[in-house]
Length: 442
View 1: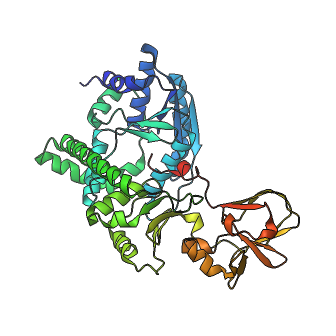
View 2 (view 1 turned 90 degrees about the horizontal axis):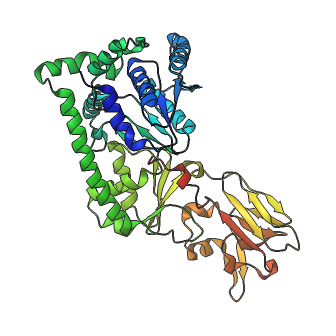
């Protein structure tokens, strides 16, 4: 029989300098084997401190007794356990919603530089690759379950990914382990259960090495995806630009550079770039990209995705997070001194300098005019066009009034009315580091 503890130790040794190991413990056989084996190894080798997390979904009545079982197992092994309750969104795919809630909880509770150990194994990998193949997944999906990746401030590692369910069961029986049998695993109503119980056993009678073969396919797809990512990085070097306005901290691409690529490379570049901000678009959504790309310059196209939208202004593509897609509420703000002012659903305003009279801040309503030295009164609409303010921002740009007269446009200091003196009004929709903290490519 495979020496499972040695196999796990070999996977853990490169991570032994991390702050701690955290077992994702469900009480099922797979995670019980992982917890038991790592706890034994920790007594024989110098490994980081160990703890465990149990996620309580609350989807089954039987699950109410599972945290107590997990507490007993962890107490016997002298491993601290945290029980975390999560809310699962009521969607068409409860299985997917539970998985998303689970990973979000792990990411939130993982310590800095901690390694989360998960118990997916060879059979899980085979099911995943086959399941995604039947759903028409591309190269990225057919990579299957990654052996490791970053997860928020820590890391995720799957040391059992090369071990079969049969070998894990043999270890569990040999060690006399007790575990929870999830009754939902017996239901063919879930797609993965159907593959596991009905399809894969039949395929394996014809192709005995099926699980190992599908694992090899996943490895080939991993290499292929690496090449695609490297190509995307090269294309991104040419296409990624600083937003035309220095104060506009929105991710942006030069549309003319993107257009010069083949459609396949455009999609590959956009998948790679957008992965930092949103879930990838499915096949049916790519026509919307071509509509946005080919729209006339005067149009205001928008490609809406799950966490925001891709917009186009002039010859630049912008990513705008979801919370800024709707117009902000009406603004009627009076300020009498310098300071920083939060704007509802519209970033913040920083006022600097000495104010000699109160200023009123509001958004564009239409027909506003600004008196500019040497140019006379100028129509606000034309000024914003001259300053190349993207159309999707013009209704958000704070305007500065005094006694009903427009004196300034936030950030456009060179247009300030003389009555403002040394006062400056700076507006930020998104802080420079805000998008970095929300990156999804983890």
